[in-house]
Length: 422
Picture 1: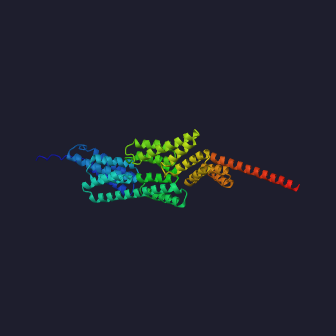
Picture 2: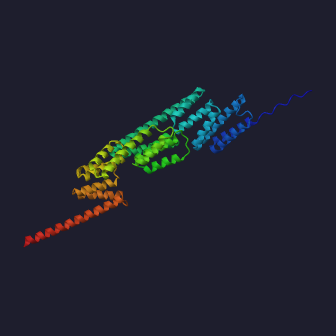
Picture 3: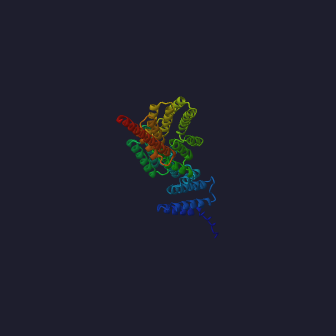
């Protein structure tokens, strides 16, 4: 009897790969995401040992589809670890292995939604629906719409806060509104820590509320992280430019905004803000140069034009009012100078230089009582700085002058009294 030919040994790659995948799933279930990710990559490694891997044969295509599934699992584990740039890379690998695998398409969509890129997420949800994952895709599309509505609402509130701050900085209503917005964004970012749209709004809200150091640190930290979002670098360069603009650092803001515009996927607000910065800096510089040339009227005109560029920029407009007030004072228009200094203080109640200049004007106009109040405010706001020291000197000089005048008046009174007695 002729023995039948021995069956060819079945390649163990499939079985070993599935064992590693199942081991990874068990690790994932107990939240050991790092170990789960290692298992998924071991599973991919086992598949690559199969002789048909990477070929166009039916078995090769099946291996590719299985690899895509493992890459999608790896992306899920990396998302849980907060390693979003690596998760995006795994999603790309999954789609490269099998573009029509619904699981991979859904995973890519979820990653993009977490990153706040609803346009990309929507595109992948629609594609996933086309290969049969309708229910999950519909839920994802609704989540995209909800995220967009939330971001739009918070952005509109930020614009309202900026407008309110331009006329009521320091008031209880404006401060409370900004504080509420910052708190709302903090809560939203805690729920979606990788959402770039919300994070960038948070940076802008912090700067609008005067928390410049925190806003700047947030932007720098995000720029230092590996980019996961397709427009990551451009968005954060724009946000940093916005923070620098809010800080009245116009040349630095222009530099970052121009960098953002040179990157792909620059935010739509980058170009108009860059133009605004350019116009504002040009008018401010023209006013400063005219002031240096002692051309007071031209300086006043330039500062007036600058004030019309961005009425919502309370901090910078405070500086412009103070500068225009100085030009009015040089032009001996003291009442207009006083009005401008008061406008500067109304927009920024922590602006020590405006208090100093108004104190000088009030002293010149003979209102020493209120001049003393302004010098005291300048001292408190800039205790160890040059403005505070100048305010202390002016107050000391004014007191000495008052003492001399009082002594002279007393001497005159005494002399007058003596003549009367004689």
